[in-house]
Image (tube, rainbow, N blue to C red; front, side, top):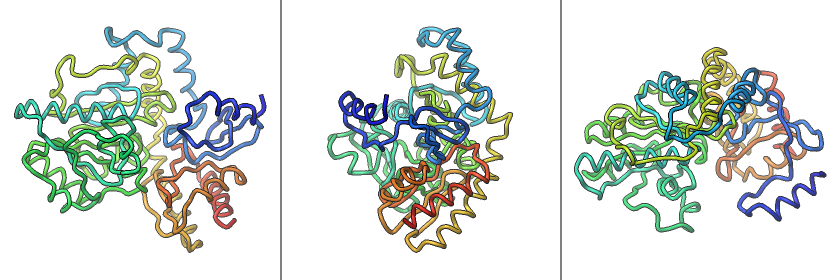
Length: 396
């Protein structure tokens, strides 16, 4: 079927939510994507930071195929070995105590919020607790996750949302202190804000919030759905700061394209929920957990995090050179292989030019920032090629 036919059929069939680019991707290999016309693209979006290992990574596909031939769903009324294996490896990598597997990052956030509320209820049998979230944050599209997403554009059409959510300024500890009260039961934040423009937390900010939570028996929830799984140069971005959360959410690169997320809890948060407080039909099924288990094996065996540190430093240098060349680039931020270029102009036309004419896949973070979140397995030659294509797109 021709590309135009596929696109036209999609517009008739699919609910009109996404403004899709006029490209139909057919398959991938390494860090390259190929459309139905046979055109090759360099992928520096990784399916919105999902394809950490790129496409057709050695051993990954085989692990998924092997599990399909055994069993790929059984429900959480029974045990399954892949979920146990994936859970053990994830807890070992994070030093957390308990894990619950979900289908997505949004669902992981929902579970984290329920832990916070349940913990507060257990503590004082009260339901007037408050959660502090951050402005310009993004935690998901479901009503609970949307309630702690600090962006009016996403929230207003779906009001009223969860009550008792208060928004502070990211990296402004005084703004958090100004909202704190005896009703505060949790703080939720991204360790590195993604959708909000690629802003890493400062040491003073994340450390100060940890101290506030410890003094008040409140929970610190760190959303690592995008910045976790090695992308920052640490397995989880909070490990750079030495500040351990009570609850953490992960997803995206955990399954390398398979739909899986998780919330993990430590200490008092690991025992807050009781039997029947939460559940999922598909979460933690054998197929997605076999994928996650293999991803975690590959991360350890192939030293993926170490590779991110090496290539991330090189990417930083090259983006710094690019920023110095173009006056329209106002700032450069990030860690490892989650970096952002902030422009003085809207980036939509640049991203479109890069895709259509330079065959380079990039994504935005807000209206003025290009988000650079490639597969974690890119090499220096891929960085050089990306810079060349992006330079051309900016110039045009």
